[in-house]
Length: 186
Image 1 (cartoon, rainbow, N blue to C red):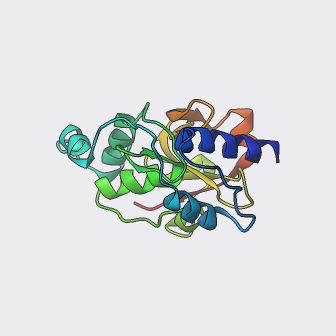
Image 2 (cartoon, one colour):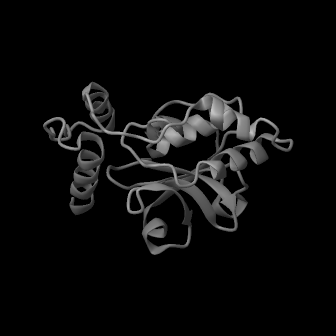
């Protein structure tokens, strides 16, 4: 419960910056929380970037969708983490990052981590390849956090503790304890 409270506080400070009154996160889950975030009129100033800028940097990537996915994800390292964010201009949450990266590589995925987990085939941890999706149980039961595996037990995800898209380590005690599964969509 403590972790959930920290996420709510961080999300509120990032999105609201005093421009609106924070509301409690609905008890019924992530989808309602996302709808609440969509309804908030925020005065937050975000970095200026758009799909065209990211496309320009990633349009001539080497062959293979896995290589494209990992290159696009690496290009987004350092972008801000924002609940409900799904673009460079608005920041990213975990599933928004995955959806955005995969879309840039020509693959459509659902918007939320739990729905993304229903896509693709299950992969054992020993069989992970770059571009696979790794899932963790964090703020609610089931697949509630997702990242893009890049090899050598590392993955790119949205790190609320760092406030940015970052590289995580599958061997970190936090992630080992919360590992939920992996999927291959490619």
